[in-house]
Image 1 (cartoon, helix red, strand yellow):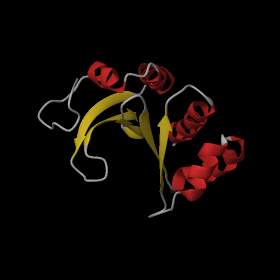
Image 2 (cartoon, helix red, strand yellow; image 1 turned 90 degrees about the vertical axis):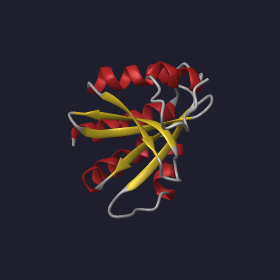
Image 3 (cartoon, one colour; image 1 turned 90 degrees about the horizontal axis):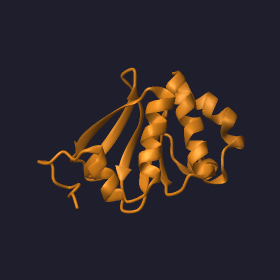
Image 4 (cartoon, one colour; image 1 turned 45 degrees about the vertical axis):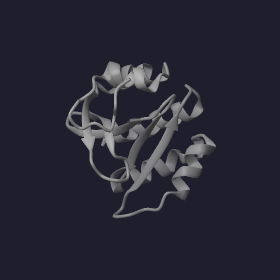
Length: 139
């Protein structure tokens, strides 16, 4: 098993998938690449909030989301900025209750909300996350 806290070994996407041990992760990566032509980049974060290796997905150089690996699930960070706010708030009533609640409970700072969405299953939260990513991909 890889050590995601070790900055001297950059893991592969396959090693991260092995660490997470959830078939949703490779499906998520495939969906990002297929739907948005997204490119992944593994980066080491030394900040105390989310220390360790993470995966940033970008489309045409613009950030779509950041994935934080966990054992049996993963967390996806989606930033809703000033450009996305109006569009996100327009679709929010159609999103799953978990995403609505998360959005409303996340404090806005510098015109942004940083939504940390845990994914374990391909369910309504997964679909709601992709609605948010659709908006990010358009901006």
